[in-house]
Amino acid sequence: MSVSDSHSIQTFPHEVVRLTIPVTATFSEFQADYERAVPALEVDRYEQLKKEQASWDVVRQATEENAPHSFIRYWDTDVYSLMKLAAESRPCVEYLMGNHVYAQRMFQYDPSVMLYARSR
Image (cartoon, rainbow, N blue to C red; front, side):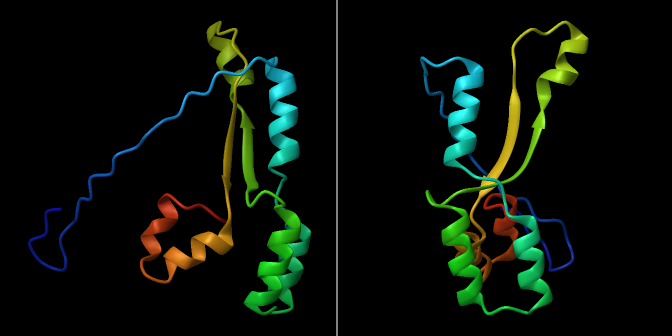
């Protein structure tokens, strides 16, 4: 980290480890399995909780129900539909997944963790 005063830009090196996991299923089969295991965020439900100013305990309970394996899909995009314009032939989908209850435990100490522990 390099810091000269409280108004200067700070840098924080961050190492990333990428996992490569071999699978025997087809892309479509694996995608379907993943999306069943990591359900999408129930947007309407969380919007209602925000409107109601629900307690964090209520949010925790809703998250447990939404994320039976502790993870929620917040966003996805079909990368392949764009890459095939460059003559690429391998299917690819990009996901943003996480758990805002777990993220909050880190956020309380340093909000910049949201760069790595995503939630929306």
